[in-house]
Length: 302
Ligand SMILES: [Zn+2]
Image (cartoon, rainbow, N blue to C red):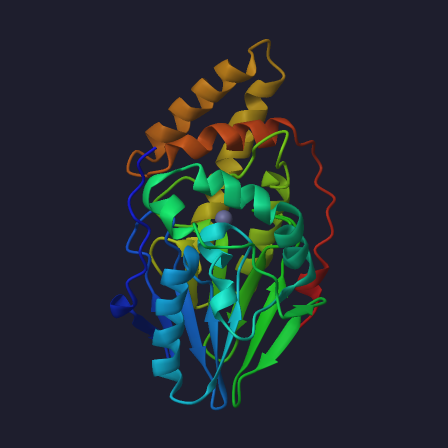
């Protein structure tokens, strides 16, 4: 595999709301959108980029923006391009389920990503699985001075430890990989090693996020937009579920079902990248039974 070097370009940072910056991923694979949210006393960085060199550049840029304000870090989920630079930051806070994802699955993902070789492996050569400095239980309000940011664990979706970051005074929502634009939703469905992603729970999480009516949505990868970013992914996951379930009780084998669903979805979204994520998505939804009865407690707390 020869993937492009997933380098974070801090020079591309744009202000999406007062004192809320996004370093855009410029549509490069394994580069996340990175957030920098400022209050009067402190600044919160959301996601690190892959490896210490990227994360150090992000930290240096955040310190420039902070001008003496304290710099905190949180991550939307444990996947390497989002979190595996965390140890260059002084204060790393995440929710309990995500800390558990890091502990339980971090080394497996480190190995998998190193297996991609090339620039990705080089960027991870000196990286160890990060350990959070602070683990928050439930919805965590972080006071940055004159601005409170909400770290909201969503429950199972793209991973078990997904956490969205809300800036309520500005209506900004960082979704991590619960949302992407211009591509098929990323399904980390790798049986038997990792089957934590749930298409049904993910749909329920997105419904909860849509109901909160964010004005600015920063997806994990792709273009910043409004609530339609979340709606677009919600609609796609609905299509993926329906097209999969329509076929799964037929005599066709999984391979045949994947081929048919893929043909339908590619025709509907010809411009999207990431077609390789359709197959694991179908596999995941084939294994899921209605009705979804998961608990989404986090949305009832403000
Ligand atoms: Zn991810």
